[in-house]
Image (tube, rainbow, N blue to C red):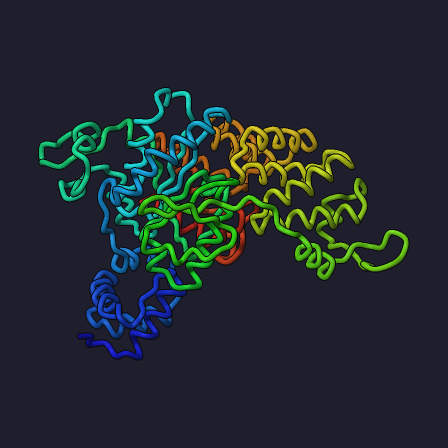
Length: 488
């Protein structure tokens, strides 16, 4: 039985859906009330109703959203949860990926979206350790994200109780954990270092993005996450996952979430007890994009007829006198395709531009991003370097190069590129942020905090809603909150 009125619970459930994407229909209002009552005490309120009114009527910072998430999300998980899923992963999916990627640069990228306390991404890391004999020669990325900061902090410790091993094969605990003096189980360092944990709000944050490393994924796990989302947030997340995957990339959800994947862009693949979704790499018709380009800024006619008008001022500046307005409209078309996650179509336009004109710096840079989001890092690196050859003093080009180098695992080279960025522009916020991340991962805490401090000082000159340059859409306010969380 609830003690909060239906009216207030309805308002609260709508608010939670809007800021966190979590869905609390009427049959789950008792869970919502229980969570919000506990959260009220954390926020310093003795009266839950007063807290609800304050929550809905006041601006809510991201760190407070993430604190609220710790009371409203469920971390029910354990190692190798859902035997059928991990059997398919070990026997079919990973061997196929390893064979394919072994011939394509030995780079494998996996994302556990909604990783809870870390059992899932660590289980994936254990399987990869078992399946790849020459692991040191590979560039493996296992990204694990969650909105709940308490879950992330626990995952980072890598220490678990026996409850996390219920219904788990005995070889997991015996082969990949050591028992502590207190009777807990700590994951081995070689597995722990394979996983990168970070905060990400699937309902609000931007993905795919080079900044949060969510691009070019071969495999995305999002199990028991979408089932708690509102319909709008589910639709946004599924679109984001699609765009984050490489061609033929795979999305794995829980059996209870199969009905939430209603997108013609994904092709279901059925195994006994398991359904996964493969990204449909078939190119779409681009008439809609072309119409949008014409309607927004139609290119000038080439000798009369339809399409009279002016191209956007931004595109004219991009191409200057090098390329005419018709080609500028093709660049704009490519940019729109890129933003919609239609990377192959964008690639076609960009390569056509480069074959019919000089190596324009902006075209090369966008093509590099397009390749990076498809996981084609060698090609991305090539076009980063071509972009730089067109404008060696452009800090944005050096920053783009650094992000690709990071994905390739060339950390020291990435640091050199980031320092070049700051030499050319000492107000380049994202360079400070990424350097801070790198130093933090290397346990150089003081140096990391120095870079973060510089980024924070520069962020205060922006409005919270301002989108940062070269950020793939991340706002100043969101980056500030991320830095504060990482600095705690």
